[in-house]
Image 1: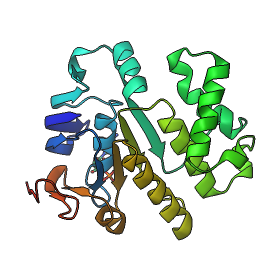
Image 2: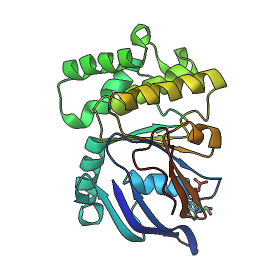
Image 3: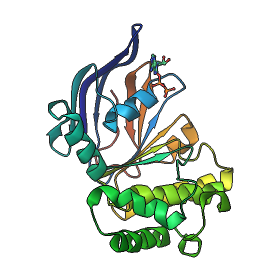
Image 4: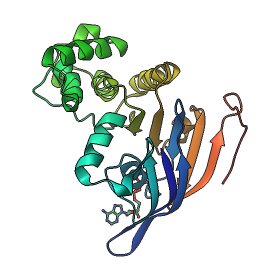
Length: 231
Ligand code: ADP
């Protein structure tokens, strides 16, 4: 994923992003961190290809997003990007297993295969014994683990987690962050969007944004291959 000179202006003249350069490499675990109003959600929408920039370029897996129509872009997004949101966004009437299996609908795989893959993903997040529970029968932390299983079941190239611990108590939040670290150790590329500097500090790379600009891009030296870079 590569952003070059990305700006976003909303109607009324609000410049939410004022020229963002950002590259995300395979296998990274990074935080995009900034205070409220700094442009995080706007950036998440553009990195997630849910919205298009006013100017600048966005490349995803070798594709120039601007050159794709909405249908091609939706297909590319489904194939390459998994989303996790603060509020879980699970289907209330469906079991954990069906919620996760629905993450594979776009693949056209038969239902039996989707359900088998969903079971494996739920095992991966430690919920093998909760497959048939519906969201209201799960704790907040368990719901978020179901949402993470749904986001990763199709093995996306990039997992975008928007304030994934924002609705959780401390212990559940720590468990979710441990899970994200484990998935990253297994090869997943993960960007966590957060206003919480403690969470950001716990990740190998932090991209700090303020007033729609990247003000620092730091690789923790213990994890660094290339040291610290600042923009
Ligand atoms: P954050 O997620 O860091 O709180 P946002 O990306 O939501 O920041 O917002 C960045 C700026 O853009 C803010 O000034 C906000 O008020 C403005 N903004 C966000 N969404 C819209 C919108 N749909 N229309 C107009 N202004 C918006």
